[in-house]
Length: 204
Image 1 (spheres, helix red, strand yellow):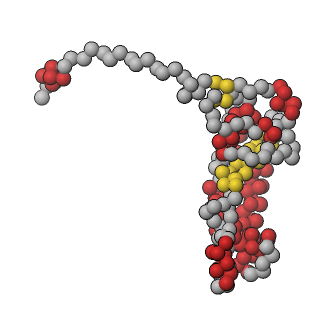
Image 2 (cartoon, rainbow, N blue to C red; image 1 turned 180 degrees about the vertical axis):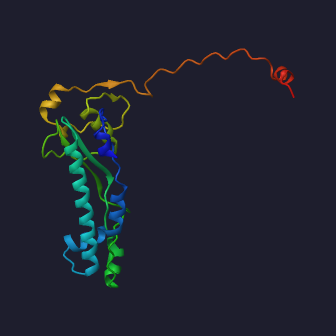
Image 3 (cartoon, helix red, strand yellow; image 1 turned 30 degrees about the vertical axis):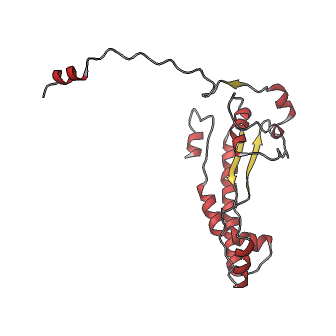
């Protein structure tokens, strides 16, 4: 559907792609990936889970690469996730290992922080903007697109993500936000007949 939209005479200016399958794949196999690929365990079920997870990520990477190539320049690609998958740890893992239970599943309970990846015009290659928050995503994307920010945003623009030349030529701009607008004047109510008169005039 995305590639069809890009092939139309008037392609969209922005495309948002949700990847719910990544969460499903992580919950099903991320534990096996960590224990087989990162910790070097050799159990067959762990290796199979790791291979399945790697295959899914390879396919996802290929789809994103094809989408990137289909978008004309100037272009900007942003991949974001509010949270990451993890594996059971602490006493839970200790007792599982003690019982010989090797779980291939991942977990989102107390997971690692999320991520923000960006590529394209104005993005500084190799930049690491530091400790960002989920509320910084909207201001950063708006700035990257050259759009103004709402004054009451809780987040900030992750300026380290951008090339110095872009920061010099593109100043921050703001628009009045919903909370900053003056209260609307109440509209006068029309003169209505009493309810009793309305009931009398209504045919049975």
